[in-house]
Length: 479
Image (cartoon, rainbow, N blue to C red; front, side, top):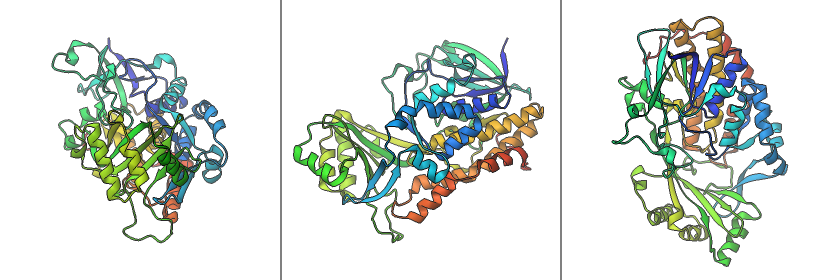
């Protein structure tokens, strides 16, 4: 017997879990969330939930919203009301700042800002769902249309290593036992295989989405099954010790000035913007200090992907120095980079599913959400936040399908998923554009326009569009 569900959510990250919570909140119970990890454990980095993401989560389920805020309560209590993330130019002059307190964001945008570890966010959201409806150790290897228009079949393997993810923002995890790919000695068929059927499938399995690859296969969009290199990368060293006292003093006096973390760019301080104003073509350096006189940095910059291939730590240091010197970064910063221990020097290329390609976000009964649809570099901190907006829209549209008894109506499903795209794609195009071009910090009007667009939108109107607008387009080219 094959288990059958109305909805299967593939991927138990924050976006997949938020979608499932949204379904539960709307009276849908016949769903399951499946994830490839062998067990849920502490991985990932800290992510920022910004006003738009929190507004979306609150409309997905107020209980989940309150739980996430309470999870972050300890961090919020440590942030002083006037504490800010400061951006400086190469002279050490402040050119921009971002408040860190929840209250400051709430005052400006009607919602706050929450910093939370990826694992804590995942755990908090998992606890909003019945434990038996979120299962690990299920790696999806196939999605099959069996010719029965009421269901699709998903094949999974368990007790198997998950696939290495070279596209992840936060870590290669190459030495992690869970990231060993299937190789010539071990094929998926050698592991325990099981199948499940669903009326609808929500693919929330990240930028390296297996579902995306499967449904794009043998379609006009097969070349877009995997993400593209965005043209940008990070070079970083998280721990530098043995800093000469005079260099430490210069960094403190010129740049830190009592701050713990700052960002440095060659943007100017005046308000006059010209066509050649600095943008993402210029390196941007995140500089931080730790206890025990340790320093670290992360540099975002445009690089050819070939320049990162199989580079040693020493070669990456030389590459970072070349780029900083070409951008006229001050000697104190290049001296710090030169002190980086080669064994601790790392690189991270950033990848993207470009919205502008118009590759469809659905195929029949399968819909892509979050990074699986439009993954991008983390420069504007909108990956998770836009994923939560996807979850709100998709959960609402699927609930409408279920409540109108349209799970057997493939045209109604296609229209609903096209509606999802029509509501989300225009904004995502603008978010990706802002991410890849980066608004100069001295362009105050452009920043205000961006913040108004992203943080101050009317989510009640969005829900109204989900519930009442119709899409007259033809089904997806992949359907």
